[in-house]
Length: 229
Image (cartoon, rainbow, N blue to C red; front, top):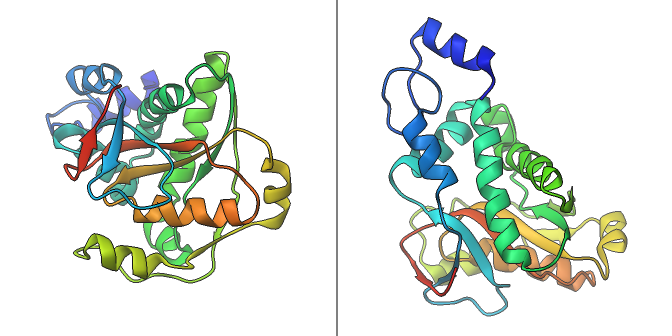
């Protein structure tokens, strides 16, 4: 985090977004927790048909959950940088030996973006691209998806109802679809729960002829099976 942000936090009595201790936006312990995470393959259970292989940077719990929510719901913009580095870790694992990738974030409804005052995933994706480029990976962001039907709130829905709720929610943007054909593409999101959102987003891209290599997310809920790293 820039020195200026740390100074402002200390001056105004800020608190760590992860553990709520007084001090900077992200304390040393919570920062080490994020940088020390080991990405893993996180298949939801049950596994949705058509979901590309999902890689999560860490479990969705405790300090990481707090940091994600602080950035998303409380517009603590300084958290985009460490969250972007965390997403970059998941992307590197998902890529394997590849050294180039297009990152396609799952879009949020415009009304939700207006309500929050920012687009959290877009901001994190840009930070992840910068982090990957510094590591010698040719990474680029692609706003290749659009929402064509706003689904209902997913909270509390079963896996089956989430899938039905999201059916036909996304479509590929035609200029992007042409650009991404035969290119390495990863879908990115903040959290994977049932996998229904990423499955539908993948379907929209693949309908347009774009092959999705996999998915990279910041965190996976407890509703998943792990396999490898």
